[in-house]
Image 1: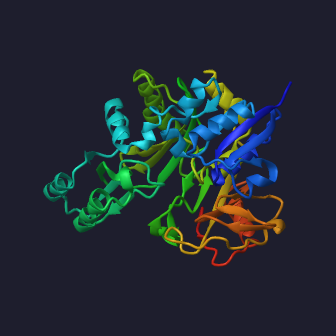
Image 2: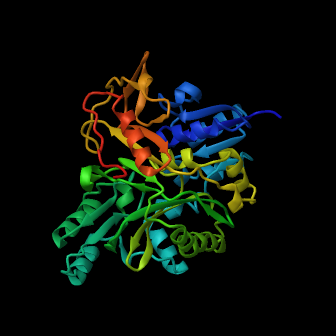
Image 3: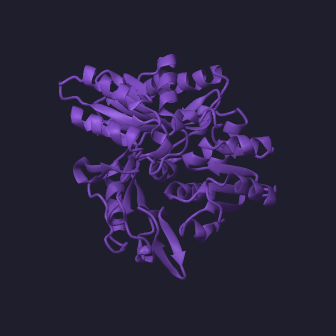
Length: 423
């Protein structure tokens, strides 16, 4: 049997984790990553094509006879990369442009959830500052709960502002709608009731008819210990959270995942790929905070080490409409990942800082590169989130300790990481 050529689109930690897991499949020959990073360069072939260059990606896939393309980030999905590849007769794992609106438009997602009776926070959508301003003035409840103001479009995980006071909410509206802090992503804004409770991420494979979840995961979004400071793309993650039972996952499948897949099919936009539900476990049950339409980052860096099976087989089953629950098996124990970030992240940060110690990490530690690049023989920083240091253990506590042991071996100037991941 001839080996398959795989193209992974993206250049972050998620894509390095995908390359690592896909590389374990006996079906796979060459793996190309566009554009990749210093980590993917070790075991794969990096391709100098940006993830939003759909024409370039398509031309490369044709030239290299790519058998399967796997899309990491949300931007190419929102630009219709899946539709373009399918029109050219090429296999690609991810939802269509229309289905990906679940992530690319929070306004669309909220309307869809209300239509499909999927539990979520009450909200209103606005395109005009004065109307939104007046709504807040008339409806503000001085009960200390506050509101959440969201840019509707893609904002790299930074378009959600939690507001404790009316002044903060009005300021958030002004930043998004008037000052255009998030560009066109803020042309629509959502004012949403603030929910309370622990968060959990549930990522499921879907073939358009069936949704089968991986293990639940919990990430740490704020930049500093004790969940302080601004939101980031994620400073660490662990799986599975001990407070999320099998019964709760079954409830989430019944109330969130299955109605979403059914609702998308009913709308004529069948959902094939990874459906990521970001949930809050409220007193009234789990409620959806947002949907993502791809593998999460950094969730992928713990979910794939816990996944027991051939990822290529699972993805092909999704594409062929033959996904079944018995295909998704997981290892026992737990997995944790600690993100090492550049000094200053999530604000401005330096690039080109040399990274040392990667050759000396313990054998049982995995390091997935995110913001790294090769400078001659040196591996240097090139992004805000630089590395995710991961480890599996027989239990979660052991996994956390192993991950932090790995962190201690790695050095770059001003390296910042949280010390309370999974704790």
